[in-house]
Image 1 (cartoon, rainbow, N blue to C red):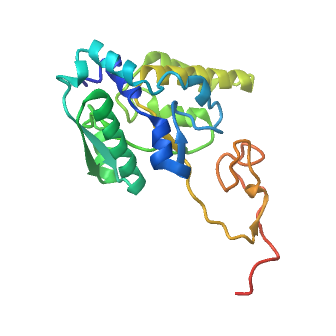
Image 2: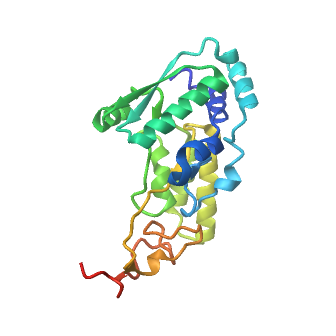
Length: 253
C-alpha cells in the first residue's frame, strides 16, 4: 500500500538506519548488524556480499525520499510501527529506529504495541492491515528454503516478486551440486534485499547460562567464534548435539 509501493521510499528507509550505532549503543552482545535476511553461519548466508545494498547512507536516503516526492519528509504520512508482543530489547530497538527515521528522513513514527494474536491476524489479513511492522523470525529447519519462504507470494507478507518466487522454487527443488544450490539461494536472497520488502536490522544472539560442569563439544567455538548450544551445530550443520555430559567437577549439592 502507498507510500510503500514506491521502491525509492523503501530504499530511503533502508539507508536511514545506522546499524553500527545500534550495535554499539543498544544491542551490545545481544545481536549483530543485519543487511540481509540469512544470518551469519546459516547455509547460503552472504551478509558481507550484500551489505552495500541497504547500508547506512543518510544523504542517499534523503535524496531517494526527495525523488519519491517527499523532500525532507514533507507530505509523508506519519507512521505507526506495530510491534509484536515486544520484549524490552524490541522496544528499545524500535525506539532507536523511530529516532533514526525522524533524524534522517524527518518522518514521525509512533510505536504501537500489540499482542501476538492481534499482530499476526492483522499481518495475515488480505489485504494486510499493517502498513509498517517490526517483527523477529527464527527458523523451523536449517535450510535456506525455510527462511526465504517467509517472503514468497501469497504468504504472510503482501510483498510479491515473481523473480524471487521462481528463484526460491527452483533452488528448493534442485537436487544437483550443493554448491550450485547454495548459489541459487544466494541469487534469490539478493532479489529480496534489493527490492526492500523489509529493512533488515539485526541478527539476534540469545544469551545462555551454562553450568561449568556441563561439558561437551557444543562448547567449542564454531567458525563464527560462537561457543554455545545453537543452530547450526559446532562441527557440522546438524542440529543434534553430538556430545554432552556432566563433568567430574559437579558440586555435591
